Image (cartoon, rainbow, N blue to C red; front, side, top):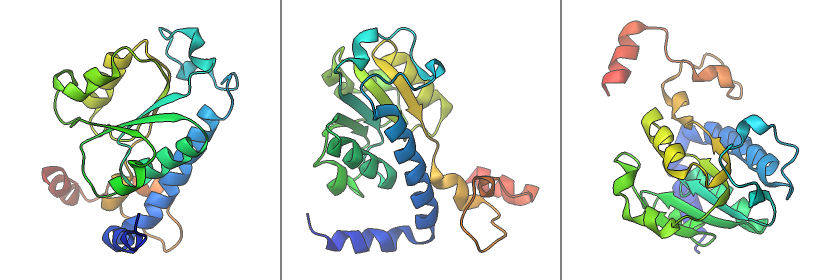
Length: 198
């Protein structure tokens, strides 16, 4: 894998990179907490799927990452693979960061902007159980709910992380590092309406 592409991708992301690094660190902390021990006993049961078979924590090292080829997803996939997890990624097949994650995972393509029941790639998963599903691409609540419904009973933990795009439209009024509170929409109603309209 040529390292020259790293410089190209850093240039493409520009000002978003500090926000992405912060979100990446958050994801990696969650992933580490979710997948650090075989028993997962240290996690609060409210994150668990009550319909999932309890044998998931005993030896199942399969993890499904939705959106696993973006900046955050590719690093999450790499971290999981380096810890010995069997990672499957499901994404739209955008090649922006794919060079990074495709070497560490089984790749399925599907666009979550459409109905997932029509996605042929999902049939490749069959009834396979997952220790965890890590959702990094559920931009619309309907996409997240559909994923949860389609996979209910097949995962023990569903970890959902929102997008770092919330910071693109925020009114950051300081020169320091980004904070979670920076993700608030602009207070100007006219600007909010323009952003909603696209």
